[in-house]
Length: 224
Ligand code: SAH
Image (cartoon, rainbow, N blue to C red; front, side, top):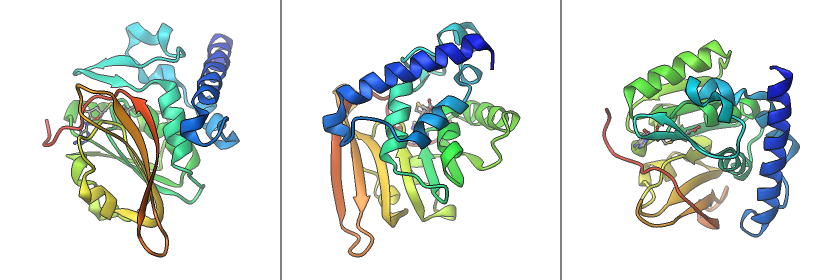
């Protein structure tokens, strides 16, 4: 990490902190936990963006990564990670790997991360990048994540980084009782809501919260 990146990263963390404070009513807290801040600090976001956009890597905005897809806005990655309430023992499923940035942030905190991407070239690139950066606790899978990944279920947390018109039932089934799912729900042509689903440890009943307005690319079915 060069000094220039370290400085850019600190101002990015400041920008995220301001946006977290401004949206505290949705998040139920007005600041990120130290573990999430440390994770954001450790992941070199410039390694996840195309070369010609590297100078924008530490701005608080989503960027295009090709194939009509994006790397999520850092604030969104921060709050999705926060809302997942991870521990160092967490076994996490992410749907929508893209470039692998969110997966890397999750892997800084959790024990293991399984991430599923439907576009083969993105899955291959993310796998190579995460390996090169030394993330031995992430498994990248090429497949349709709307079916989840039953082979490694149940998960303590599930993050969906593409918007679903309705909640995929398979994902809720693969969430461990006591676990949390963070998912943007709503149609692509409308504002979507970032929803947190908590599955009760005893009764299995699901409680919804958050409902922050967001804009994500759509969760599509099938593979490419
Ligand atoms: N998590 C990424 C952002 C991903 S953008 C980050 O860290 O920046 C959403 C991704 O979801 C895209 O790459 C898209 O191809 C993928 N996607 C859409 N529908 C999917 C599905 N059914 N299964 C798996 N991936 C899907």
